[in-house]
Length: 118
Image (cartoon, rainbow, N blue to C red; front, side, top):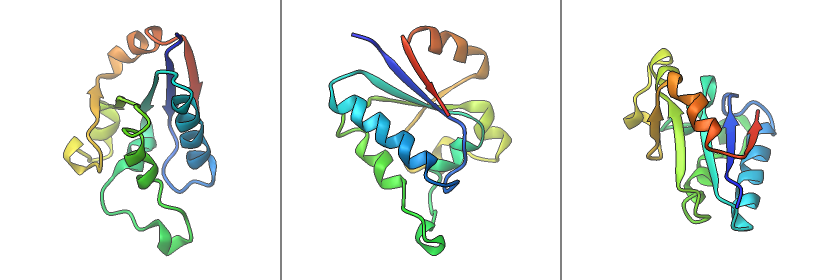
């Protein structure tokens, strides 16, 4: 069975892209494929507490992230340096994540057979 890793880099509410990527993650997991998510750069803001996307006419993607566990997506990683560079701590996020150092990302990617990047 192939391991899927979805690498997200875009900030939340940057168009339909984030939601489309999360839909692909859920679809992959719904077909019993092992899927993981890695948040890099501004994508770490996607999990920040207290977002009000409805104020801008956007859908709340936080609810999709909360559904990941239901779909058996067990690993959500956030790059530690991306969090620190944006003044965030894991406690600022609405979902427990596994932090990973930048130097370890290549190793994480090698453990997966299919990479989706966006």
